[in-house]
Image (cartoon, rainbow, N blue to C red):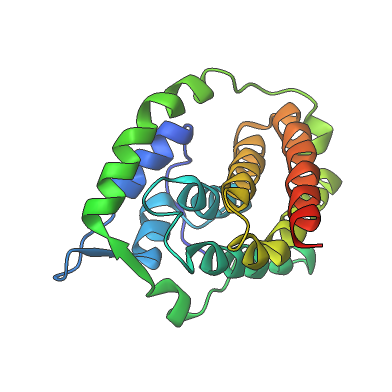
Length: 199
């Protein structure tokens, strides 16, 4: 998965790209097509996609979706942690699909808040999003992904994980360490809440 595209300009641009993913004859959109539309060359974009999908209404609430997104994050974050700069994903995962109608409706709902979020992004605390900071982000994303299958039985917790992943992806894309810091805090709160609910 080494292909390159024009860099994403923000969350709204990512949603636009997802909306442009080609539909299949059965009116479904495959994960692989979404990743191709978004661009697969950066760790930030490969975090944004599962984060946004898990957070989207109608899509992220489908049983099994958080677990599939967790597998995607585990694979990508794990490969980054061992030093890979291009990412491999299995075909069985890339061929998972969602209804085009549900995806279009969810993306349209999120476009307006996405534009507001984009206006808040700017380079700051860059030590959290460069070099060693990237590995720290990957490590915490790996931990979130490990917990996500359990979150399917705790209402709204998977949405919190999706939000954290989205924030991590945005922080890397915009070189905004403040968003990475906020995502770290959200991760701690979400994981603690799940642990409390299950114990």
